[in-house]
Image 1 (tube, rainbow, N blue to C red):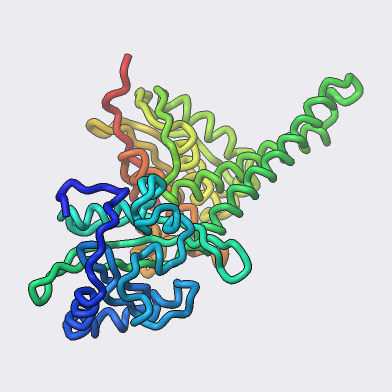
Image 2: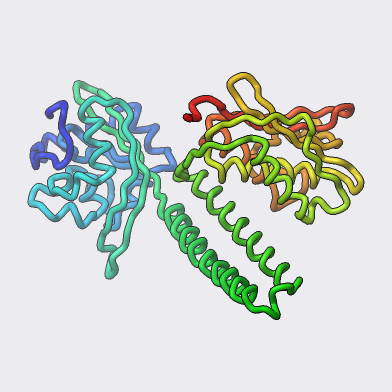
Amino acid sequence: MDAGVVPPFTAERLPADKVALQAKLFASSPAAGVLDRLPLGVAVCNITRQIVYSNEKFRELTSRGSGAAGLVGQRLGEALSCLGAGLEVGGCGTSELCRSCGMARALAESLAGGGLAHGECSLARQGGHKLESLDFRIWIWAMAYGGETFHAAILTDIRAEKRLVLMERIFYHDILNMVSGMRGICELLREEKECAQNAELELLAFAAERINDLILSQRDFSLAEHGEYEVTPIKMGTLSLLTDVTGLMRREPSARGKQLLLAPDSGDAYFAADRKLVTRILINMQKNALEASKPGETVVTGCDTDGSYVRFWVKNPGTVPEEARPQIFRRAFSTKGAGRGLGTYGMKLFAENYLGGEVGFTSDADAGTLFFVRLPAADIGD
């Protein structure tokens, strides 16, 4: 096989008796006993991409109900009943459509000696009397045994995951459209003279804005977790951004009966980052501090420079319990009860995965609790 091969492949296949010998050889290998017990689908191919081994979980992914022997000699797409496998007489991997197939591309990388290869694949197939789709994540690597080279493929079914992502996107799209309609009605009413000074209307408009912000925040969080958030850096001043966020948070229910102050020695510096993500981090920091404070207590927030970084921080008088500290940034962990715990996790996810920064905290009985985020201040342009 050409070391630089990419799909579509040639139609070449080994004779059935040769493939049967390879299947018998691999079945005697120590690897077969291990792969049999994996809870994921596994198929092993020879250098012409024909299956010589499959475990039970892989056979469950097929729509034919074939036993292991029935799949020997087939190619991955053929075993999975991919409609694209029948486009050319050479079968799976030989059509132009296969250029975009994640499974074919991962197999090509493994055949070319590229080490562990991985990808995602979506294929359509005729399952019984209906058309269905199969989405899976695949890992392929080469292994040698008995003078033969094999390529083991592990497949995990991600149909439920893909459906959830699609449902999330539809939900965010539809509900944002509804909220946009509410905001539009509020704006039209504001233009009417008799409604211009209506306090209830202002309250409704503020509520619609907050709902919109919360939905966008959750949507961005979902995109970030899937690695799909697109960062848009702009130049900003630390003090003006923090002042805006602090003014907003003073109107939050969590701030009632408490003081939220801006540290008088806060310094102003310019930096470049995604304003939306930084704003979300600062809101979460202040909200957590306010929720952890008692009525009559004071929360202080500030900003400064820290070497080649800018730093935002927020401090409250309370302390984080010792047993909670190692878990504070873990997803779904919260000291506030069930159904919480995305705030600190989201701060770390946004800052460290997308902004090149760092989130941390200190907490003790004398000094209280201080959360901070450090973000690069370099390369901000003119």
